[in-house]
Image (cartoon, rainbow, N blue to C red; front, top):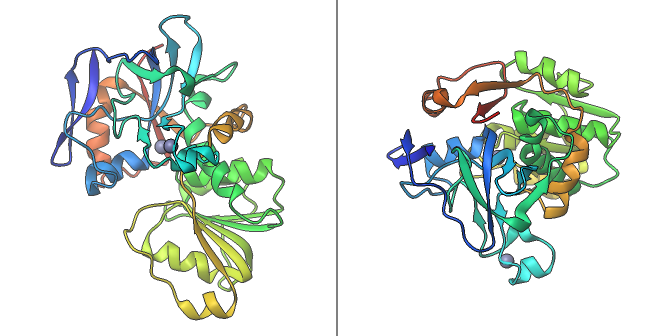
Length: 315
Ligand SMILES: [Zn+2]
Ligand SMILES: [Zn+2]
């Protein structure tokens, strides 16, 4: 089958590879759409997370089970269900976790092998909606870590996670949703999804700020925009280090916390949020263009309006 393989040295290639291996807990899925994620780019460029050459990338996908033909989305986080974190219900923080497209063969391929319990029925979702469950669930999880009383919320970055965060905030009934991005065209999508403002004030007024970028600047901005007692939730992983002014953090009892992926329950819950969501910010391209497209993103040459690229692998 055709698959997009990481070959080492920041390189990806379309290759003919052996069909996905199937363990006795696994189901083969014919992939229809798979989304390119910031995590894929970060892994290729910075080696965070580290990829072994030969790995097939891709963890955001929808497809049909080979056995039943049912449309399914795959939760890419494979948890051991035995460690302390798993026992506490935090399977996304499993100390033995394996992620599809990072630690085992992913979904930028005609077929992917997935543990059966990681497959969720996609029901009546469109293929585009279904392939967005991962970023929507990520946004939902980040919002769950914010104080539930937050009414004034800012989102930094209108990439896929930022836009999905706006959709999650809107669904949660948040009154004021402000967002910024360095690509102004993307802010229009944010408005459509429910952002109430695309300009940020200079002072600290927000109950909560969600940083969907993770650069040094946005991390500083995230804390500077908080009111006294406010909470910054960091999702984006762009920069390796966090460096913020300690005075306002301590003197104003502000909180900074990290948010990673989602629980299994949130992955399922995201289906309800993505159904009927505006997806005009997703560009779908033929699978043949995947290697070139990823290379452009890795080289920083990708500056499209669309915040998300889906690979059309099957129909
Ligand atoms: Zn992702
Ligand atoms: Zn575990």
